[in-house]
Image (tube, rainbow, N blue to C red):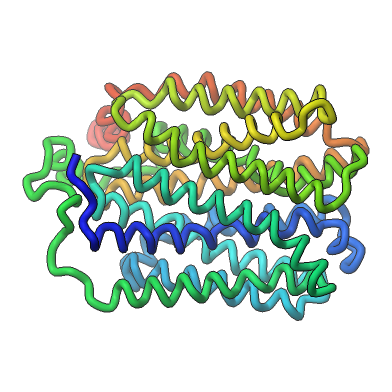
Length: 415
């Protein structure tokens, strides 16, 4: 396989820097949840909105990615996303009420939505033969950013004597990423890089280009991919929101809860990089998706049944499963379309559906916690959901890609 050129390597570094900024706004909240609830008076359900609302914004914002691309373009859209994240994090320095924190959560979520919806299209266009590698690196950088948010925020809060500072400090890496992205895109190259899709499109690409009117809203496969992506990410949002609180109930301190969440994200980042690489030489991604989901299921079962026996093992299994399936679900989505424009539309739709679905998970877990006084029921519900997603994975046969994506067009033509 052809080696990366220097410009490709620079683009890859920029993608990493951008990806690191997409999760600290979520993961920095959870270890500080007790202090935030005490200062703002939020209930468990209300506090869950600090994690759920950005995810809802990610979903809703993803549906507007097409309009954003037409108005400002993909690269400027990513820049606006980074600006929104930076402003939202900076505003948390003076946030004194739950309402203000919820506003910053929504603003940051819209920024993340723009980046997550637009950047895969850029990756598909620039790294056509290396999409699994680059999507793995992008996903791993997101998970690593989540680990930094979980691990450093309690330490920053203790050092600064304020949870506000621990939330606001994440504006700085967003500013760094924005500057790097703008500098990289000052002079766009005239043609594609050596790793872009070939000048002579494949038959799949020609097929995609000849059907610009593919209706994703009427397409069952697009909805199935969105549901799969959403329920997989429901596990992530639930654990990010409530894992430290769960272990506080079992006698751990705030630092230990944050360390467990940070440890989970380390395994997420590793699996997000390694699982797509392992699956890269296989056209059928389903066995690898099942492996990732099975690891996630094992971790959730361990957390539920034996939480104090081997907490690091359970978070390692859950984290590896979450990270690997997150990246590989996006790769599988991109596999369905040969043309990067249709692929970008499909990824945006899948993320739009998926993140709206994922946002419900921590809210439901918080509601169940308020109702029952424990997270056990929420973890059981999550385990059942993962089992259902293992069954759904078998529907994603590579032989069905072209037929599934164009089925709505054929049905429309018969009407």
